Length: 125
View (spheres, one colour):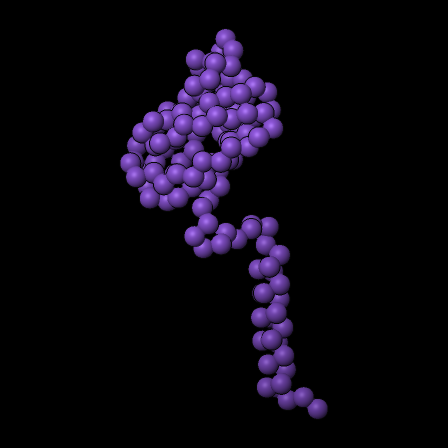
């Protein structure tokens, strides 16, 4: 015959087990400590998606760039970004912005008549 304490221990153990199971089944993958956050950026004629991203000063971030149409550039001198993005070959750039402000990233590889309007904003807070 179980006492009230035995039922209490069983309930606490069951609650702990459920909490652990829910944490492991979370739809939000955990990043290993020290692993940079990854920001996905897509380049296509004549835009970057998303059009704006916000980063934190001093936070290391990996920008993962992809394109499916033509070769694009991704350039922002102040943040030390100068990359070529080729179709079917994702490009990763890891940066740690030290300067706050709003920066305009441009495509510096001619990709057609709308090329001059191909830019993206990076805000560093």
